[in-house]
Image (cartoon, rainbow, N blue to C red; front, side):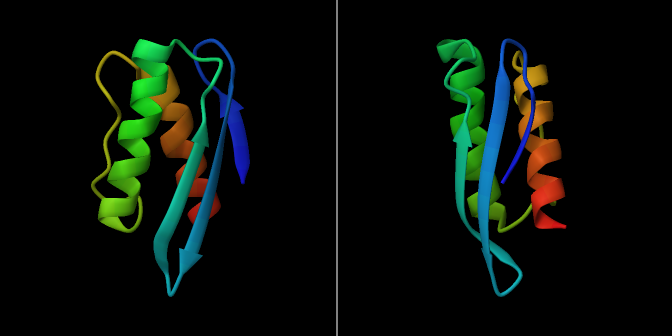
Length: 79
């Protein structure tokens, strides 16, 4: 797991990797704006699982700070 600053709070990402592929993602963005950062965290978690990693996963429009925190953390955890 790793943490980084989102828009309003620290965002924590926990990722499980099995066989080199992302198999579980939990993003705690509970103190971010629910309709923006919270939805971005949910969307990014789904995207990371669907992609099996960070390749091809983009930030969420309108939630750039939360998305960037999530994406950077996911990349760091995966490495």
